[in-house]
Amino acid sequence: MQFGATPLTPAEESLRAEVRGFLAAELPAGHRPALGFAGRYDPDFSRRLAARGWVGMAIPPEYGGHGRSAVERFVVAEELLAAGAPIGAHFVADRQTGPTLLHFGTEEQRRRFLPGIAAGEIYFSLGMSEPDSGSDLASVRTRATRVDGGWSVTGTKVWTSEAHRNHYFAVLCRTSPMEEGRKHAGLSQLIVDLRADGVTVSPIPYLDGSHHFNEVALEDVFVADDMVLGEIGSGWQQVTSELAYERSGPDRWLSTFPVLREFVREGAGKAVADDEAAVIGRLAARAWAIRGLSLSVARALDAGQVPVVEAALVKEVGTRFEQDLVEALRGAAETEVDQGTGTLFQQLLAEAVLTSPSYTLRGGTTEILRSVAAKGLA
Ligand SMILES: Cc1cc2nc3c(=O)[nH]c(=O)nc-3n(C[C@H](O)[C@H](O)[C@H](O)COP(=O)(O)OP(=O)(O)OC[C@H]3O[C@@H](n4cnc5c(N)ncnc54)[C@H](O)[C@@H]3O)c2cc1C
Image (tube, rainbow, N blue to C red):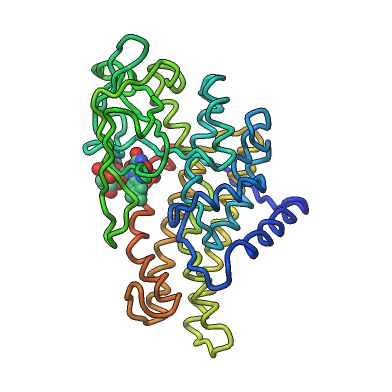
């Protein structure tokens, strides 16, 4: 496992300044920051960000993107998340579906979807988990059977974030029966229009009543051959490499940072007790160390490496940090957690208490990531 020290270049630092300038103009002082990439969904903001060239940064120009590096994308994502910008509409398509289409999609699919993703106009969900299949994805039971001109898909996906608002999702399904001892074979990914006949999207409300998740039932949904993503039978390898893109970025350690920022802002000018200062110091030091790991994964990606194990470790330490931050501030502030009332800090803290438990589950649980990291060290 390797994490090289990697300072930012002057050009990368000046990109940061540009993004800060944009955000200062876009997000009014005192705005309610989003917590994490999924915290707020705002297609207008996504389109404005895209107009500045900051969506689809890693997509090549011939497909409407900007051919920028993973580190440049890291810098932009870091600023957006630290400011609590509303990036929930485009973020998954930008982080995950775009690179997957680039690696595995047909030329026709790239031309059809990538320009819309880079314009902040086409949004994708992820169709992996099922009621009886989460960590052990190879056990998915959604089935696609061969029909004239394509596939007929039947099954149920669950925890499908934003399926009620997004346009498509990439469905992991079984295209041939599971064979004894070869459970990873026979899986494929199909691109499904979330408004197609036979697709039913039903909400699963969050603890606070908000709507983010869904159950998506598929009943004899027709998917034409040209919507097969990659090779039939290679779904497992594709999904595994896709998960590596989603595990190491600033979205895995900055989700609750706006709570810390607001805590510091509200305390500015007031006397700070020693133990409060120590909490802030410890959190800042930890954030800085994790940032170094995360940035080094982005550099490795730019160098053409495949840092799957390092990415798993970043998500494990990063999401644990996001949760510890909430508990540390809850203790330091000695405040009642009451949603919807109190100062902005108190409101954000209340939101974080309810949503942060999910951070160590989404995108692979902590136990699974530890297992990936441990196997990589063996
Ligand atoms: C906010 C959020 C958004 C999500 N969005 C999406 C989405 O858009 N699309 C999608 O497809 N999914 C999504 N998910 C689902 C997520 O990927 C799964 O919840 C996750 O993979 C875990 O699966 P599970 O819930 O079935 O738990 P299980 O796999 O049943 O695990 C239950 C517990 O057992 C542990 N465990 C399981 N296997 C092992 C093992 N081999 N060794 C040690 N411990 C183990 C796990 O760590 C966990 O603690 C989302 C989840 C959350 C919380």
